[in-house]
Image (cartoon, rainbow over all chains, first blue to last red; front, side, top):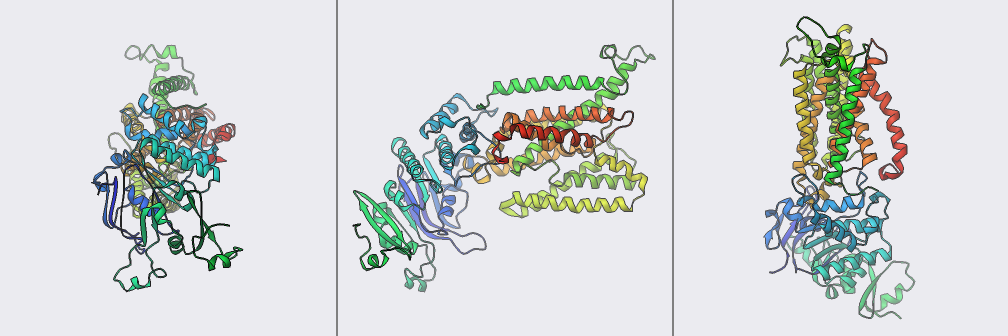
Length: 293
Length: 343
């Protein structure tokens, strides 16, 4: 194994709840962009919280940079992994610069002030995310997309090799969704960062992510009835190159919804089909993955 | 516009505020039922036997009281900052986790039991108030911790319930007690400034100053905690350690303040908010500036308390609420357009 993140036989369940993740193994090579995709409740955010050390695995191990995650202190881990959570506004009225500067907290000197280097790193992160223009404004006055970019700037200012993001584009319009992914892709390609993003958007994931972990929860009842005879249910997941993982069959199976798959040039896309979709019968009769007219 | 705080900016602001505090302390020491000349007071106690009334009033009566107000105001404002940050709740004040009712209960017990001993020159009331305050806050912290991961909500709930419970016990004891004993207690519950001796001021002042410096030392971590525990952890803050230290110091300096002067409301709520509205929420400047502003506010309020109805005195808690309320509302209206959590 040579991944910067190595997960082996990972299992986790919250107290008083059934196991959410069961026996998951995968690795993320340095410098790749991994998407974690799956339906609500499949354990995507839980997995992210395990990867950043917020939760302790019930069984199995997580290695970051070849060392077990528990061997790092909170401060050491913050110098390897930066996390962007689902966006929110803090209680107090911090400005954009103040928020991004907080990334430097583990590096502050005796009196708790940013050094010249810290300021340069913050400036660079503001520029990279195109947030320098609202540096003096308070976070509460920004739109959702702008705020998300500020939190990504903060994560960049942590100067970590790994970046974890929890649904970075939820609530954003098309332009801002693409903007965020462009930004992440640039960080991957230009700085060699390893990026792990939990997302609901399979089309953007298909376009930007090299590798995908498709997480389907621990119940396999519809998909593989024979596994119920096994002693324990395992997490239903697939991991591999994005183009291999995203097949219409697999997406239909994991999400439990009909999809229409197509491609434009080299980009694959998927459209979910509800009960009232006009051409659903027509599509139902055709093999999945058909071409658009 | 607000830019990032630099040490230079902080030093300038703290020094200006500190100068203002010294000026206010001096002026307020000269105001009172008896007029005092600063020039006369500087001649000192004079020859043995001779009495210099200006010196006597200034040094033995006014100055200790002004210094006491400084210490208590700084302590309350500072712990208000801590509780608002830790609980991520703008409504939090130093008494939110049961310190007031615990101290009140201790006081009532001391008064009703009629103790007359002293501990290092402190009356049983002060000692019982101190123990009651710290005991209650420990109880609330302990119960809140049992609530587990969501312990911010757990703490708040535990604090509210313990406060209500102890307040009921206080009312019960007041109801069954003989009335003349109770009068002193009621005065104390509304904030009671007296002329403390210098020994008590040295100890109290030392504790509070040490506490404020220690809090300043963890202020970057408290900034990060404004975004919640999970988020603070992911930028490298040892949240459990920071919370425990901040909480313990805030509880301790509040208990010191309460044992010196009873329950003075409003300082811990409005001063931190006022400073935040004007200077921003960075805790590195919030601690020093709130301490100084809290001190100025309480010195002025106490001067009003002892002069408005002179020679009688008002409980200082009445003045802090009457003066502080409108002042704070004016600040709120002036700056609220800048503040998102009020929108």
